[in-house]
Amino acid sequence: MPDHTHAPAPVIHHPVPLHPSAHGAVVPASSSVLPAVTSVQLPDGRIVTGYTLTPTPTAPAHPAGSVPAWAKTTALLAPTVGGGVAAGGIGLSYAAPGLIAMSHALWSAAALLVAAVIAVPLALRTARRAITGGGGGSTRATTHITQNITATGLFGRANGTINHR
Image (cartoon, helix red, strand yellow):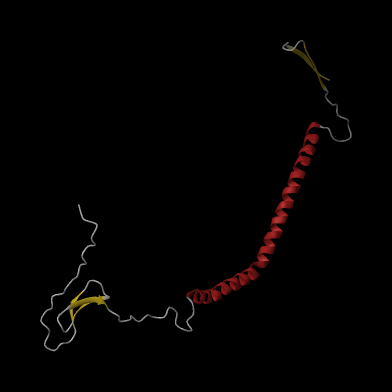
């Protein structure tokens, strides 16, 4: 069980000095895994590891006076869209006489269809009268059909007569 009445002794690291170099210059000891961390051997032989303070030059995000990409794209597409609209207008102007002729032909076809729906039954009625001899001022006898149906009770059998006169 540790004794908590006394504070722990501080840990002090004493680097072991290496033999100083002959010229006494600062020499990097080894390359580190991290790019911003460097180990350096001081003139008294100690090796010190720390962050390097060489600022990395940053490129400006947008150089002054540059045009954004969306503006370039819009500027390139504008003549294309305008040219397409112009070509469509020219095509419609060339096609206008044909389109007008087609609309007249469609109206003529619709009128022919309506005339056929009205004229065919009239022609059939006239042809039937000519075949049966009903035309020419003579009166034709009409057939009258009468039906008499009787039933007794809710579920009784129905009886009926049909008269042709």
